[in-house]
Length: 252
Image (tube, rainbow, N blue to C red):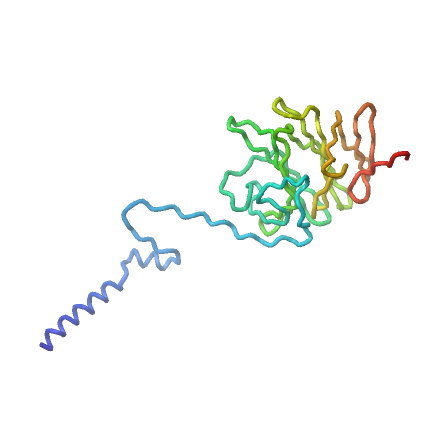
């Protein structure tokens, strides 16, 4: 009887030893350091996309609402994006086509001005545009300000840009031209300023900062910048030290 139990014990030990020994193929996959894949029947599921870990943005970026308070969700100020061409850092959509891209060298560091114009279902540029001011940071971009313009108001476009020699601020001029479907009857102009930390209306006070005039032009003269506003006659205003154009008070 003792010999009989010894035989069963040897059989059990042998099975355990055999089950614990991996095959050569399994050992190669295990030694490679990667995950062990099991050859199971059926269709394999694709690995779920892993969103990039958000980085902390510099605290000198003002945590303020976007200009005109039209921030595109996911692009609020002081949020980090691995790919500025996506609507948000966790978006799985295809990158938006760029309509314009310019980088300024400001005292706060490099600043990217990017204007995206999504395509319609017919493959044509849409009437609205997504304007984004962002600073390169940790392999991605930190949003300074971002907002959408256009749509029923008209087709948005970036007309001109300018940066101060001392790097304190940059100015850019945007145009909203009415379309056939627009409810607006005249062209609107918006002059925006930025120091790389925040954005502001450089001419006018929100929400009354859209100029409804035939034409607006930026006019650099040496280290100074002027804006020419075309109505019946041309009004020329000089940019002040605070990054806003100086409007004379009545009677002066």
